[in-house]
Length: 202
Image (cartoon, rainbow, N blue to C red; front, side, top):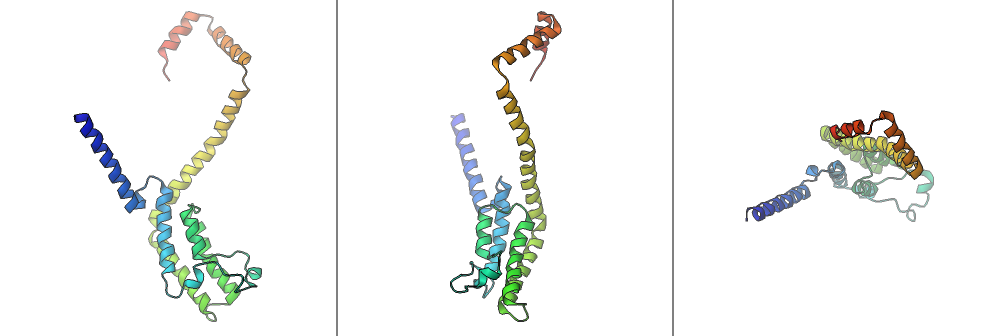
């Protein structure tokens, strides 16, 4: 009876944890989820800026036929949002660069903010994004460090694992037998080897 009650309690705790993570992704064990959650809030705030609709999606080549001849690195809030949801960004700088690319493109195609309402709006979008990045800098820096620290460790270990596996595959049965014979011959005393084996762990 006690075991059943304990099991149900554990199950309810797990369900509660899942619910908490769904409500607040910052509690998720995967730092990419929390990182993306903060970035997505910034994108949504930028999209909520009045009259920012022209920057919500890619420029329609049919309506603006020469746009892509002049702009070689197009960017918009919809594309950035999709990148966030796909966990494409692993650093704040990557995200910031894409936000700023919107302004760069508008200046290049439409002219400076003083002469273009589009560029003035792009400037407003970038200003808000930079402000929110600064406000969340501590949290984002911690999440970014965790994400890239994990990725770095995996990158460092993978070559060693692959090399070890390759060496294991190259070792034939005959070689394994030879190694075993060599190991036994080192002590010259089988009883001594057995005693040493019993005293070792791991």
